[in-house]
Image (tube, rainbow, N blue to C red):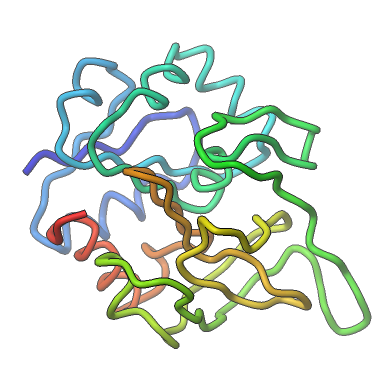
Length: 197
């Protein structure tokens, strides 16, 4: 089983790599298109702003590489958001793999944006990835979120409900950071690596 974490130019990658190594794997961190295409599983991490993240993927000539992947792909946090069509952040056009537009979370008294902290998720549709995750708690850091749609596997709530885990075909996304989510995060990553998807 070969695991690739896409080097999309973002920061804070070491925690993702360490989380995968704790599961007994040795992930490759690369922007080499051939290595990415040949992997059994691909993880697209992301930290930062949507517009700049897309620029960095384009600079590395990875946008079409990612769009054409056939193996299971997991986008994490901004990596999940990049799978969608567009974002209110930077009015950015994204990879267009999942229909929908990311919208800024609404701020209100006692409800801060960015949403930072632990929230539980609620499964909305059956899937091998999420069957052990209902009601578990995960660590979120984000200001923009995907609306609930037919592609939503699990939801969470920060003021209003949003998509916490999504899937369209072989493309999955997790809005939270599984690598920072202790045991629950390890369960998700292990399911992504080992279950038939």
